[in-house]
Length: 214
Image 1 (cartoon, rainbow, N blue to C red):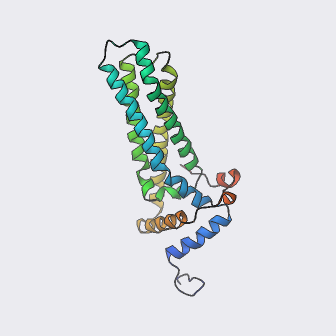
Image 2 (cartoon, rainbow, N blue to C red; image 1 turned 60 degrees about the horizontal axis):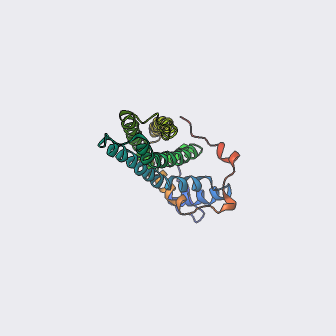
């Protein structure tokens, strides 16, 4: 089989091919480069959600050490940590929903390989927080019930995302030879260096044409 040549006559490398694809991607709305940029925000959003959830857990633990504390005071002390954990988790869920609208190949990106495991860890921490607030009997308290219930719902969504992303990665890796994965990762790096302008952002219909399939 003849090797594909670039316009200059030299063998086309994965890098040069990725650069060409990058240019085409921008012309079509920058779908892939937008996907990579979204993926790059994953670590930050995940970290902020973990920090907020851990802060809620620590505040509940402090409440457990003060058995004589008045319920209303405890509720007020815990309201902000639980509200923050809920808010950050909602932002993370929104980001994960956006990631599902991009081509499934983004899950081959090096950092993306850690997403399912990270989501499982977050789910376990969220479960621990819910269990702790139930132990102190404040999960149905007036000032906390709404956020506690919402956090439990979001936790279930996080668990489902973890399962779907993990399944999608396994299916991708079963179809793509291991030696080709590096080529995909090089392409992602190239796309990351050619971010789209606001005018090049993909519209909803264009993005939805390449949904992640599980």
